[in-house]
Length: 217
Figure (tube, one colour):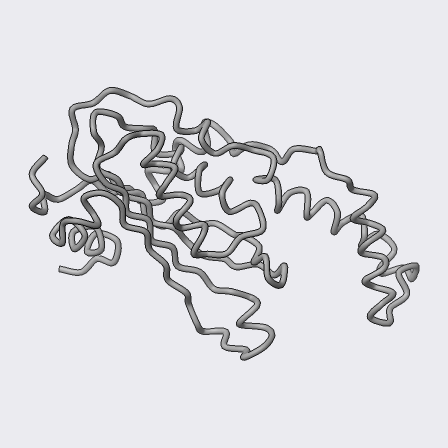
């Protein structure tokens, strides 16, 4: 593997969409205590001074319960399964999937943060289908999260399961807990990164992946 920049492959939404249409993202499991969530939501509505039995709110607890089942579905799935099937290839330059959209729930306030993930890696004899990277992002995001941990988890999964030469994960997100409450700064964006292997040790490789992500010359 030559550590000098060598024009890695990048894939945008077009490349991802074909694979995702062939294999829809996993449905949310149903092993959630929906009645317990409904009771809790009724208590919250009553505690803030609302009448949970009025017409507009009567079905709200059930809707919220179903929503939480969907948003936290990643608690009952293992993203590693998407990296178990790989292909033996001699390709040893960068593979980068950009702009993987996701939404997650900040575990501090249970408010959403929404953004996109960029996932790049340098194979060591193993490559995975592009949609598998999107699935890993999806399942890691579908649980109570903090962006810093989510970034690190995705990078570690690729290192552990594919034994790649390097992994770069960059996540950009807008956080509701900062935009609609507290300091109320709706234009702020949080950017986190995790660089593993050659992306940590080799400056030119790190510069290459960041240039490919952000389109700088």
